[in-house]
Image 1 (cartoon, rainbow, N blue to C red):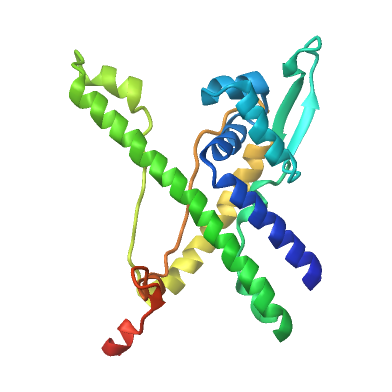
Image 2 (cartoon, rainbow, N blue to C red):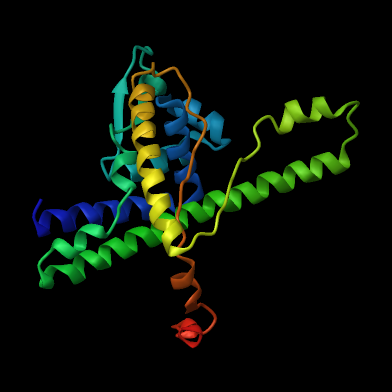
Length: 238
């Protein structure tokens, strides 16, 4: 892939992520990732929004060629159309900038720009997801404090069947290198699992999302968001 083709690919990724930074459109993407194929009526029911509203958002997503539309025998119904994401949709958004060093000098700046903007919008999408989790837990907490259940099991089964699982670690530079080796082996096993999952029937739901992220804390903390400037804070400790 040459520089111009790569730039066009990155532009499209950025535009898609910008569209996904809207809560309704992100919910459509998530529902299609979970259920794979859905009609307009089903999307409307699952989102609690009118068909016209859902259709409006579907048109925006379809304009970026990330939706595949097929027809079923529904006797002329509006639900004759079934929506799904294009094959390999998720593969297009795991961008890494490591490859930039191999580009000619004059091309690095433009590609770096699109790569940074891509990651910025990706984290905007993740921000929406995390904000949704806060609202989800807040609602559970509100229900649990206001409601009087006869037993805890009843509440657990109704509102908290699958809690969020998470781990976090802080590593040295040496630990990070060892982590990369461990993760490489883990990723090979996950790739095999994903291929197996992709062969499953379209009727099998995929309601779990795993986000594996490494945070470069020193670089992130070096940016003072209040004053909008990069600092040299850590140099004082070297």
